[in-house]
Length: 482
Ligand SMILES: Cc1ncc(COP(=O)(O)O)c(C=O)c1O
Image (cartoon, rainbow, N blue to C red; front, side, top):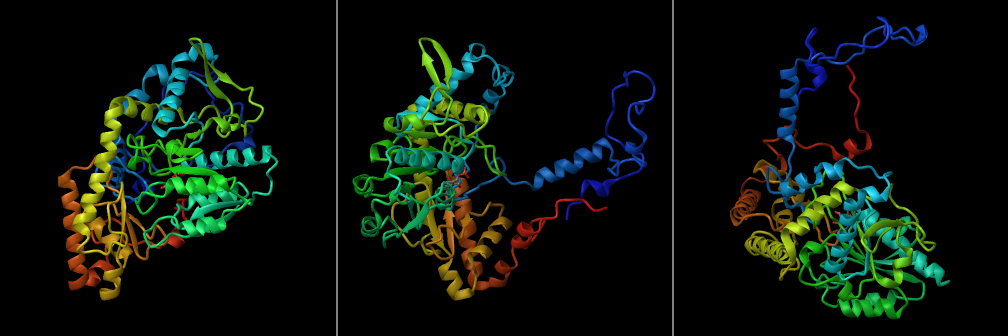
């Protein structure tokens, strides 16, 4: 186990140089009342500069990210983040401005936000976008609040329920609940798609809408989407698009054309802004014209050649984020879209789908794939076979993959597949890299038969073996006790 920096303490060593003190007088404590003065020096480690550098460099080697390996974490779209994004986000003209500046002095930044909203509208088939929300889940909350504001304004207060498919990402029911809706689960049929009969049976004048991602979390395109939209709309509800899976369709088709009324996107997935470790992210929300009045304020407007903020929006659900969103993340995603262009956006999508189908095809002999047909950007396989024959679980396989240098896929999600492994390679992986991953999973499938204990004890090569994840979450120890 790696030592903590506190354990490297050597009396007298130091790695800092303070500038000469140029304050008034010699005694830097003269203005501090005696009872507030410390009796002893702070208990912080004394470490030389080189040991400090070595310590943090060693720690950085233990971190795993897309820059050092394959990261097929389904639903998360862990694609490579081109370095030009970082260059753009660091341009002094963009970093050395402040949200409290007069809009006249930040016209370039406002133009960027305005153009970004228009590009996202074009890509998704929506009419307006807000860039304020800071993540996908935050976008969901913003979008569902607008749906609620719409029904309320019409005096349609009976609609107290939100429909969510049983394959949905956990943030969907959580969001509906936070906004005050009772969640109604819609069943999937035996093809892994929304069960239309269940949807029809549950749609009523008490339902505010349906939250759906397309392709769904099984990586399957909801082929009946037009009929789904018609059922929801005819019942007076609205259709919400969880755009976390947009990488599977961008440049090919648009949620706005499928009948969705509200859309959120994850710039930190589809549009390559780096994520992981909790952010920062960006979850813009797009709406059709009839919902524009509810958008969070301020809205960026263009009058002639001048860009400005419009705060005069009486129907708005209000501000959902301080200032105008995570500006740096938006700049990175803007750069990505501009660098790819319209053909590049489509190519990236097609490559992502090809990569997922390549993996699905090569893994189908060794692993059970419950919905084994053409998938979009991701697919779900299961360790059901391995569990039945050798008591080897999805968790064991995921841990063993780490010994081979791969980040495990998303495990035990979606909930409707037992022993699920959700694999999303994204478009940026080469065929050689995919072949390496296939070879590792083939080997693991053999090991499950020949030496299952090896999998149950994995990982063998990482700094930390299996942690008690429940204990780590419930009773985290985040304080150094010397
Ligand atoms: C399908 C789906 N919806 C919503 C979200 C939530 O997005 P975020 O993590 O940015 O809040 C995710 C994130 O993994 C997702 O995969």
